[in-house]
Image (cartoon, rainbow, N blue to C red; front, side):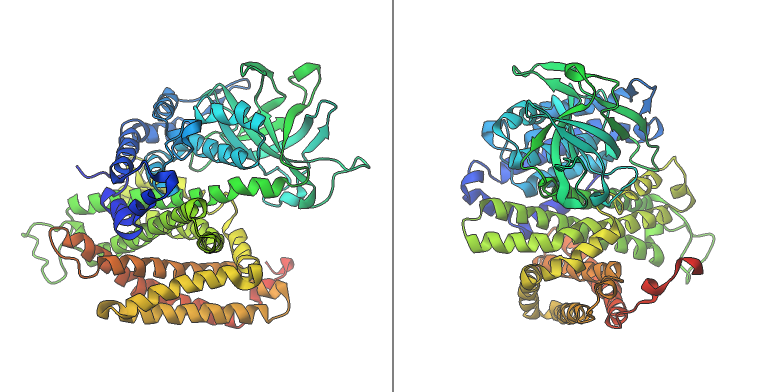
Length: 604
């Protein structure tokens, strides 16, 4: 039976026919690999996700973790699934052999991990955060920190988190007030509160390694205002002795769990640091270890945040994707109604997939989720280019392009693959709005993705306020050059020439509108419609991604012809139904409209 988690045929198309990941095996880091080893890793991920993660997805949603004031309790299936995940070596799948890893390319690692997010986004959050935490410390930590904290995380004995937000600050990290006081032994004592900390407390691992943003006071004892005063610290739940054994409990306490609309399988915590409930080494204050340099914390944490943004985008994709496959299966099996031109009640009812409006909804979902999956895997391949391409120029181009696409890969799937979930519910009709069917949970789970790791609005500000003008427009130029190469190839293909012209027109308008917005001479006006700019830019990116897929699919015949025709039809849908929306958005952006900027509090 075909999996309703993800389409392996589509993933194989993206990895091998489009992205040509087999070519990575010519590079030293991946020389031991082949398509066979990549497939074996994917098979393992799909099997564990199907057998151990998916079966308790609904149960962990209905029986979410609870806190009795002393301990967090959750259903046992979560721990059992994560134990097998870790025993399979998947926590270190992308790491060096010397660290017990498989040295899988990032693009293959992400494709495999997509199965876990599709099967159970709540349970998969624990390894997702741990892997990001470990990767950050591998970039910024000392050898001792790596030995003490990273190695146990890669073995699956310790889990990790990221602690940024605070109750009074939210996304405004410049306003955090968690304090880190330097100690004579080189450690720091942290006091403060962190809110919305996913996986912040549980009994799933021997220890929890928190990466915490805090401020070291200046010579006057006051915290330095703004982001320049932020430093990054390792704050473990339990201290670790020199021999690697666990020591006493650190002064980190769960104040309470947040009760979420979705993502219920992941504990989401308010953590108190330094309240004095525990007194490590005889006094209050959570013991922390500085990562990197003082006051460089935000730059170091961005290693984890940027990785998480690609991961959030991929998570949004796969929730939309599994919802689409559930809707497709339902539409193929649900009889209801008849064609308008043949309403004879004596005739059998049609399967609803034969109704045009249902086809419309399914085709929209296909365009969103298969386009989103392609974008996420393309960005993952850019990580591999950064790591392993021997050409400095190619590395620079990949880095610029990934910088440019990061706000898109985070935000576009979070908006449009959520819409795919919305349409999946609609395809199910009344059944889709009930808890007996899975699609309502997929929607609730996916609704978090436009919020965390930088809201939709923050991504718009990042794209328009920073990315398109960084290094005098170098990132935008790298993106435009990549798109133009695709356009040039498609212009030579009769079936795709019209789409190539349409994409070229949209790209030129994006360029012109960007210049016009900056010519306003007032950043408040320039950024007033940053979210709309993000949406227009994102749809243009996805049109490019679909044209890339169409270039591979066009002209393919044989036993798999239906698969390629489906790709071409989804591309046609995107160019006819979705890309035209961009021009209406750009029309408004061209006016440098200030309607929302000019609105006053008292007028609401």
